[in-house]
Amino acid sequence: MPLFKTPAVILHTLPYGESDQIVTFYTLDFGKMKGMAKGAKRSRKRFGSRLEIASYVKVTFFEKETSNLVRLSNCDLIRPFEGLREDIRKLAWASYFIELVNEMTAEKIQNKPLFRLLVAFLTFIDRGSLKEEVLRIFEIRFLSCLGYQPQLDPCIHCQKKLTGERFFFSPVKGGVVCSACAPSLPDLIPVSLGTLKTLLLAHTLPLEKVSRISFSPQSLKESRALLSSFLQQYLGKELKSKKFLEQINGNAEFGMRNSE
Image (cartoon, rainbow, N blue to C red; front, side, top):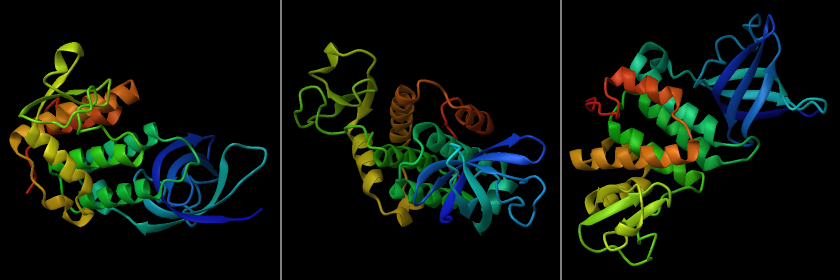
């Protein structure tokens, strides 16, 4: 059987029997995959602690015709992200990104931009970039990588270019609604032109500049409500990691202070 090697980020592990683990990992070349790591609890040489959540590794695996799970034969560390293990806030942020990827992707669908996005933002967190803007930028770019990017211009209802200062966002429709169309649609979220421009900038900003961008207090509040509602529309539930993140930051709406 041919061996495959690819960079990967560990998304989830589940104990299986006395010494094995079922591992979910997101790869550069194959998208999300699940595999059996035989003897993972015993073999420090082949796996060690490299199967911990958010580990950036190179996995070696082969496919078995009789199983939906690939067989992991080896795992080499590319980057340890040690900061995520040493700081509970960093771990909370990383867990949120990891769970989003795990919940919203199907298996064996290659998405190299998404893989690179995940690694880049885990790197930001590991280095201490715990600004709320980083959360929002990841969310908007994550949605774009999956083809779910919300329509921020023109109006999703009448398709007219947005003019003025008063707009709304429809999580159900997945886009911005002008003030003329708003009365005919339910469950809208108010959003300003400044916030829309900020989110459009966040979507195209070079990754190396992400940690330097600052949202206004209004844009933080509006983008938080907009993206949270939109993600909830797709997920159909609240993520456990989101609750954890809220508890760590002491605010049910991610209203943390920016870390300097």
